[in-house]
Length: 313
Image (cartoon, rainbow, N blue to C red; front, top):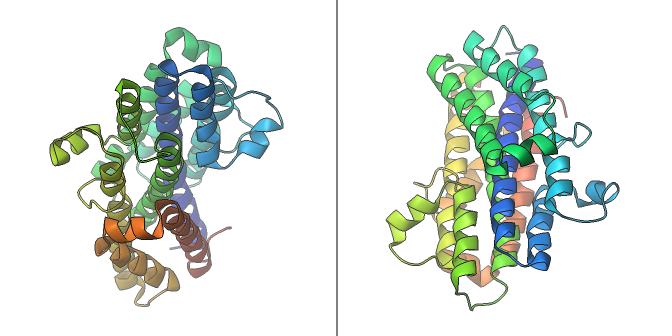
């Protein structure tokens, strides 16, 4: 397969997943801000900038972190490359370049999402309800993945698109947990209605609240939240589950290309660390150092994929 085609597919998967992740982050920040004091609400909105790493760009244009400025910047600003609108636009551009490699249903899903997003502004979302808009973004992402799964041939094109999806998901879950765990759990003590609601909102942001209740049958405990989102392979958005998929995709690509790339080794090493890791060891090192290293290794993996398959940087 041409490296340009692989590049378009890889980034198409990443952009669709990133748009959904941003919607999830904005939704949890909005829900948390509704029940928080003004200073805490500002911290909730600011955490979105911390997770995405674009605080500097934001403060070049805005002076306060509130719902209007953050949602305008993170949802609809075409000049912000991490906004929902920009991610959907770039996903569509990659899809348009791939008309011969993706199915007509996939293209129609991408194009329709882009057309429906055109012209939307903060005022439109505010009038109709923030959560309704964020749910719509998530549903469009789910639709695209469902159409992809149901119509696309299981060839190299499919593998590279899925590779971008799971690499983006692993990075986002780690960033979300790192920032939110520090924000919500500065000390060992936790309790009260507000604490419970905020932890529930965090779990809801990765569609994990029901899974938590089914697995642990207890009140939300920060340590259990970390375990669920890091080491549980049966949790679809956990770090371990994401790397299980990445490792499996590399096995398929290795068989097709009849060679071993360095990115295969990096992903396999990380997956084994997650598969055989224990929360006791992670907390002994420190959750923040562990997640910082994980994010760094995932970034390195992304760079290695570009080098190994000669994708566009």
